[in-house]
Image (tube, rainbow, N blue to C red):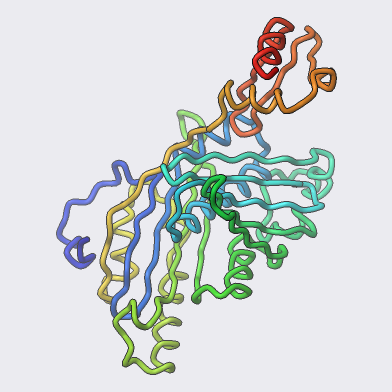
Length: 326
């Protein structure tokens, strides 16, 4: 743990500053927070699918929101964020394991998407949630294994942005007041295009945890408003600037508020699919029902929606698979 004020004299560099979360605490305001920045992991996940820009940007925002929410919890398993609706984008799913493996994918209707965007438009418009998702819901799930009870929170998609939808969840739950700012962008470079996304989160701490049991309610509300205003003052350029270290961004925003930094946590794009997992799925299906999965070569082909890896089974493979299940 380090005081953010001491960072002003350090020669900070942006190396290893992406695909990680940087937790912090504003002692003067009784607030904790997190800065999440994703880069290479987004390239690895989004570009392998070739999604149109209007689908890719919402997925990037959903992934950074997933990390921001998951890292506020203590869990041993999988945190999943799922957005479903009746609009052009039918489904976005992203999840993060407690070991730091991140993945995500999208399902969408190309024709509906083109109609929603209109002629000549390719990117998701500002306030895109109603237009691209329609009526739907946002669900958070924490799965800690077969011997534990799964937790799920579900709220309707209300608001123009994913950050607004997340605010709806916090308002309707018993969570502490929470502010979230999310930005995502694809940059064109001489080496191609690269994705970056960032989320800045502030959350009011319980009086006892913050050591502020003697602070009256009016002061707590003033302190909370100040934290939200400072968070909102971060610009998209600052949050996504590859040359600006995350620690320096937090210094710019919160150096006057007694901010302290905690150990950062790194993440990586990594899918959990494997042939063993697909074997288990196929063995749960009657062999005669696999006909619909056969490709033109007669192979039973299963493609992972998260990483696009294809697992193919010929008749000999299926013989061995179902013999082992007998």
